[in-house]
Image (cartoon, rainbow, N blue to C red; front, top):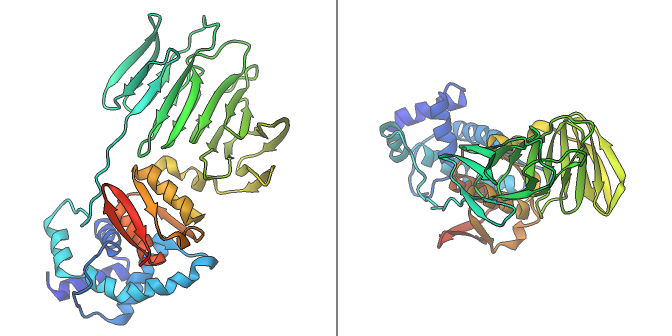
Length: 370
């Protein structure tokens, strides 16, 4: 690929004429270039237009991080030059599978179901299996989903516990028909069967989305360490990760939220609202529900999050370990929206905006001051 053809491809990008494949290639590999020695002649206006297009689509800046915008512009011309280098253009044309220059090997941990008698069952999401209790079918597993069967004769609550490791998500249907989608790094304790004349109650650590089957006689209760959510039948998300304020976002219906130490004082919210416990009181605010549920689509969304909390999200989604030795970054806040990027692509995006270096040692990512 000569300079003329490379320049033509970048010009197409500025004019929004790239195919989806060409656009994805340009955006994905801009931030991942390591070699800054290649030179390439481009009009300055084209350089800046391409760079600003990419920044506007892949990374937003708030007031507290404006100072880092100059860091982006500092690298803009060099990165655009590198992007157009014959090495990567040729690799794009001649190869169907382009891989980052740096790869981080991760081991996919198993999803574990612990039964009431302390048996631990490893869930193979590539297989189908049936689970029995005292000779009776209680659950069928198909791929990445559980379907627990209703047993009207059950009179005693028997709890199972499912653990979802980092890098995985899992779906399940409880015996009352309630659908649950569990995020990475979450644990749900739930009855194999709900019992008549008793509340439908589950216990969550982490994050999950619930679509609760309506039943006026038997309220559905989600317990976390700090808050509880009581519903009759509705759709909502609960986030109880340790680094976040315990919170719930309502997508449909209505719910009552309370702190575990004061269950009588309940806060009712309506769709489009988030209830969260902060400064020893329950707070309510309007939110974008679609953004709050973006994790269900595999998206990694940062909405003015502190870098220290962003690290936690990256670790959960990609099942990696990150050690941050550049602690000055921890309180900085960022916005961003990622989906199909590799962990290396994501780190390189932050690297150019926040100005840090990183190394990979023994499968651990170490962030250092530049």
